Amino acid sequence: MFARGLIIQILSGRHPWSEIISERPELHIVVMISRGHGPQRPNSHPAIIDPDWDIIQRCLLRKPELRPLADEVLCARTKTRNFIMFGEAGVGKSALVNLIAGEDLAETSASAQICTLKSTEYPVTVSDSLFHVNLFDTMGLDSPTMNNAGYLDALVKAHKLIVSLKNRGGIHGLLFCIKASRVSNTVQQNYRLFYEFLCQEQVPLALVITNLENEENMEDWWTMNKAHIENARIVPVTHVCITTIRGYQNAYEARYIESRKKVLNMLKELGSCDACSVDESVWFARMSKKLGEFLVPTKELGKNRQKMLQAA
Image 1: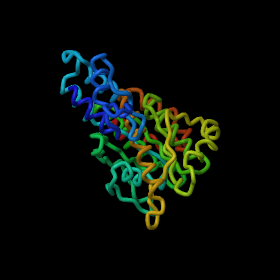
Image 2: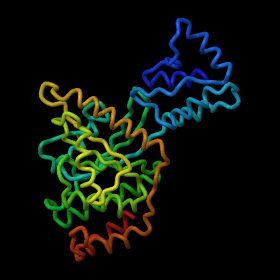
Image 3: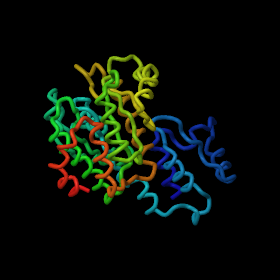
Image 4: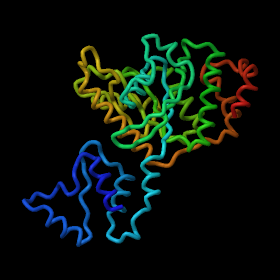
């Protein structure tokens, strides 16, 4: 387990005790170990998140009986985290899947309306950090271009997905994807629908702002628009400002690589917390009262009541 702790730290991109500047660093290391001191926490990319650092510290304890068992370390490093992606059609959810995976798993298209017709699961393993995630790309709930029947059908499918994940370890986070523009009414509705009602404000939500490849500093968008996001009553626990495209002849390659690092670190932070599950027993009553707020006439509800109840 002592060696395991060192190996995990090496994966961060820095060797253990690299902070020691000496011609004979091994002597200083022996002295530090004898005094019960371990290496400093690296601050380079990819960053070691708190749960990983806790495992490293426990693996490096002097007394073997105090170190974690191999099964505990393996479980912490290999358990799968579940994330649900949502947003308007055409914001780049499929491209985000490919960014995270580091390869083309999801089909992307300029005709985004036909690209994501239902929730699609993408199991992804980030090989450089043994990080396993399930990404669920949901249908774009773009009410201006969707009739009532289609809207309710998408609603039922989203609810069914959320309920099904209760038996698969729960949900570790919602990834709310929006384009780098002003927040529309549809964006606000999607937020309220997924976060407030479908997930009952129990699942941490991360805001993913895309289409920032032309910005010199992508994070500047958040600085300039944070107040507008707050005024729209959108309250994420974290955010990332990114691009999901490399561009013609890889013109945006540097920003693409930066974006992938930011998204992976965000997923690791969200995945370090306990997963959430949603109480489906009160879902139908809540949504029956609130559907009118999402511009769906309540007369449509009767036609879909049985389908909704079956999904619950």
